[in-house]
Amino acid sequence: MVQRFGAVIRLRQGKEREYLALHAAAWPAVLAALKRAHMGNYSIFLRDGLLFSYLEYTGSDYAADTAAIAADPVSREWWALTDPCQRPLDSVAEGEWWAPAEEIFHLD
Image 1 (cartoon, rainbow, N blue to C red):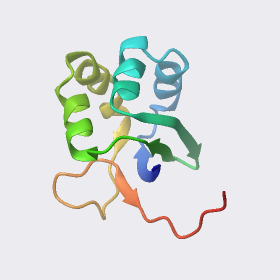
Image 2: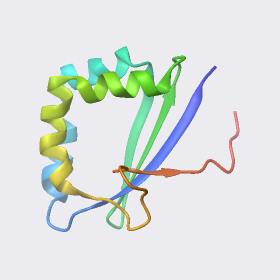
Image 3: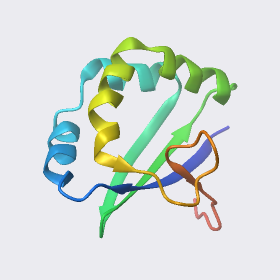
Image 4: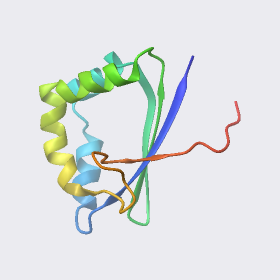
């Protein structure tokens, strides 16, 4: 079964060039960690200072797989570069960075 996830965050003003450059040369070890965690068809879109991410999860334990990514030293190093480029939405819950988006329509 495929689970679809969307999330939103703001791109900090003045950080667009840096963020785009990082993702134009995404680190292979970071991509491998995502794939090990059963995440695919992953995209990030940019519009008017908002980043929208979409991914498809094919594993059976999303919490464990996302925890494995969070524990991965290379992913943490990557986030040390990307996080300063981002600014969470005012509406995020405690402990959230990207704000989850509710899927309201899907067409296969």
